[in-house]
Length: 253
Image (tube, rainbow, N blue to C red; front, side, top):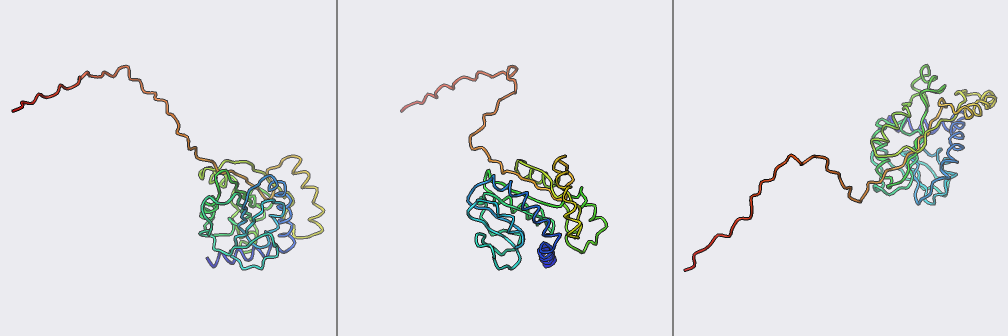
């Protein structure tokens, strides 16, 4: 748990630096069009304090951040819940939308947190997961970057794996797309000069963006009984006519 806590802490600090802030801004811009389509009463972001800005475009009235990090909330609209990420302190089936931005990449047991996130979502509620795309320039750099530094020390989980988990959890895929086509250049001037790559990537609908976003909806179990059609032929089955047994006569004294 301590190792996971330090990873998440370093990830949050990295988001405050230039390249981390660039990732955050790209995701905020992309999610602005996604979050504006969903309504409800509660939205929960499971992540770090710097990621609170991702909820800016959401019109959902009750917004929460669940994080293991201590933070002074600077966003008055968002309430912070400090918690470990093994068991979320939220009732099952009570949340309209859950956002998991990269947090699965920096914990020891990502599938456990994924399961917990699915547990608290209402029927027909939604989950949004973002992660670094292994099949991108960002994933390519991870191959030779130091594995002890953020963000390269995280698990770059493939979007196909996320979609498999969602299918097994009875979620229906709504959207899968990538963005952030610029390479991870930690130089502000060069990074801005490569802005044309964003337009090119969107134009060609390239699947090789540095960050993927997966949106899915929880399925509803039907309450109406389903009539099963009986397919077995019974024409060859003979029923023996046993008849109704006659009443037994009793001798009365």
